[in-house]
Length: 593
Image (cartoon, rainbow, N blue to C red):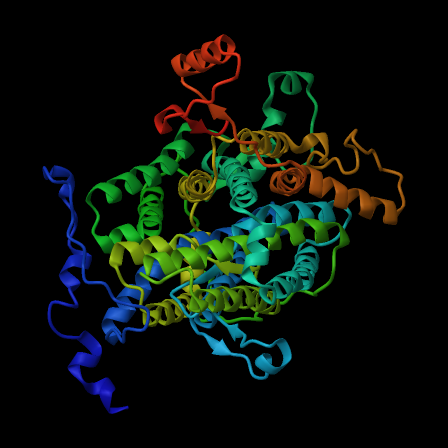
């Protein structure tokens, strides 16, 4: 193509493409005005030059890579494998997630008309949103995958086989999202209003933030085993099989919450603060990956009190230089007890996708009450579902839209779809080069904790933001639904063992002791246990039920005290009650908080 040789095709021309603005650090915190000049806005269909698209796409890729690699890393390191860990499988899972997310992002950014859909459904259907909306491995499914795989392993199923069963179950359940993509958007919004959605997102954030804290202290498994270090247990002289309460980070092995581990995680958080203060637009967009690399560097040049390194270099040396999908495979299957939690997870991602695509339209200066917006949501939902099926076939966890990339659009003022295609290309390249996943798997858990506690808390903040912007928090009905739903959801998230078995103690929870039950009854019991001990599942169902049965608040007319007394006196003094006009400023509607 001759145009590819042109200078303008690669670099653009004029002040419209300001590379200097993107890369120079920001010192506005020392300025009196505290303001930063915004660059030129680039619309959805603007043909930005190749280099500019690659830079913008790289920012989107860096903004999401920290989040999309975390679910597979956590699932394989702590659940599928556990101790002893399996770096080869972890590296493959990360590579598969990167490649899958890149392919799905390209599909989502496209807007492909589906043949014959107009004749069959009476309207044209699309695959892909047609806006700069990228895809990545979803946090929403992380608690369900962890809990279900752990449950299957307690039943004697191998971790890799359990993971395959979850992939198959996920592919089956995502047909629900295909169904939703064919419904009118208004019907979906009525079924899942912002009140229910915000509660769900907040509960997901609460669950994940607790997990992030476990990483920060040294690791999830050792955090859950720390009770073995209790003085009463130690003094009793009792011995237990693994896993043990010591946290392995590289060659180092110390107790959960050791000062050294906390300090390494804290270096990541401090880097995030510094970048937020002084970083350029480019640095702020990829702050998570930069902070992670800084924390990784600090861990690499330091050692524990015994001289042991926090980083295992063997993970990098043994990583394949080039890898691709299906290097590792997992036998697909179906795990019945996980169906209900996964269906709820797909309900959540359906609502999230609608919100994410709407947010993309807003930051892209596109109208949200047009036919184009409706078609974008329909195509985005269908792409979400199809990509979750593809993810299972690609041996990766379900994919969904990534909301944090909306912030990249807002910061750079670039909504061009070419940046989305470039982002997908970068993600695929990162996944193909296996040494990248080797570096990631060698990062200590405590450093990952410093990153994930920030990432996971952003999910919680997103739920709070949605509630504050879309829900009347002064309403008695709203407060009642939120209080009851969050109370139940947060409660079982903080302490799930009212319904869930302790690690290594299958079928012993007093809620339903089932050690001697048949396999069928155990399956039913596990499904109920997973549902009741997953905070966002029980919390979401509670919110949906209350939202359906509780009537709207009745409006009250509240009078100023002086005017109310005057109306009362005049009406009792006259033979006929006198009706007085009420000034506008004396009336307020709604229940007082």
